[in-house]
Amino acid sequence: MAFENLLVEKRGAIGIVTLNRPNALNALCQALMDELVAVIDDFENDAAIKVVVLTGSEKAFAAGADIKEMAAKSFIDAYKEDFITRNWERVTKCRKPVIAAVAGYCLGGGCELAMMCDFIVAADTAKFSQPEITIGTMPGAGGTQRLTRLVGKSKAMELCLTGRMIDAAEAEKAGLVARVFPAAELMVEALKIAQKIAEFSGPIAMMVKESVNRAYETTLAEGLRFERRLFHASFATEDQKEGMNAFTDKRKAGFKDR
Image 1 (spheres, rainbow, N blue to C red):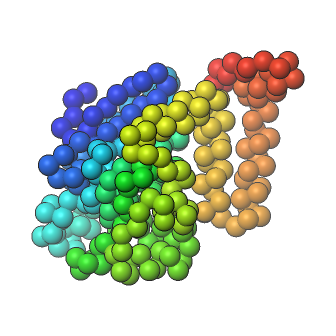
Image 2 (cartoon, rainbow, N blue to C red; image 1 turned 90 degrees about the horizontal axis):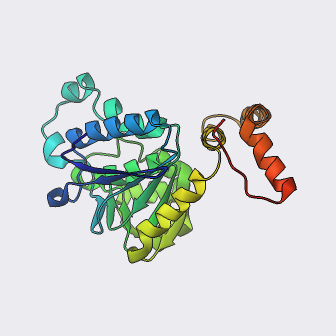
Image 3 (cartoon, rainbow, N blue to C red; image 1 turned 180 degrees about the vertical axis):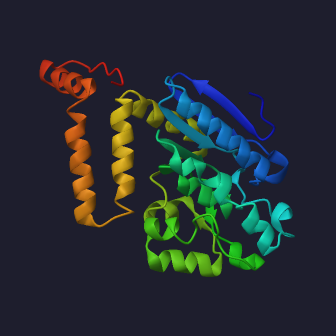
């Protein structure tokens, strides 16, 4: 498929999506988000793709939602069209691991989109912010919720109430970012991580993702119960037998996603 706002590539078992609105610092317009839904759907349905990497440009992952597009909306406009909910949340429902590779500005909706991914790797040039309060509104795509879960109440409250921008080092220290790399090495390193994940069992990776996400949705006791059920379920897979046999045989496992 041809897209106006995205560049899409399949590299082996890795699907790469690049936000591509260079004249708007990759501002997230509705057309872009609709295209992203289509790409994620395609990757979900492609058995050859096991990991997705979402990235932007050296200058900006995404500088936020498209302000020009939403400035004139009324409440009823936003409500009737299910603004943001309708298409933005698709990334969070992807069963395959999704990595955000962030360089440059990652602000507002851009930061929220990155947080919808399973984890963030950042260039040392990355800048993160939830600046919505500076334009008379508040985060609406998870900024007050996911950020709080990642960095804690105090840090999230300060960032959302001041709109302060933080660099990659502070973001990593706070727990927003998993790893930081030199800008020139970001995509190489992100793809190395994606390739490592892709070499494991796809169904087991999905189970791990589902279980980690459940930690944010339930109590510890229920989360442990959920984890235990999936752990037990893994013993019904061929890949569990292959992985453990390979370990005892001192050879590399050949997972078949079954």
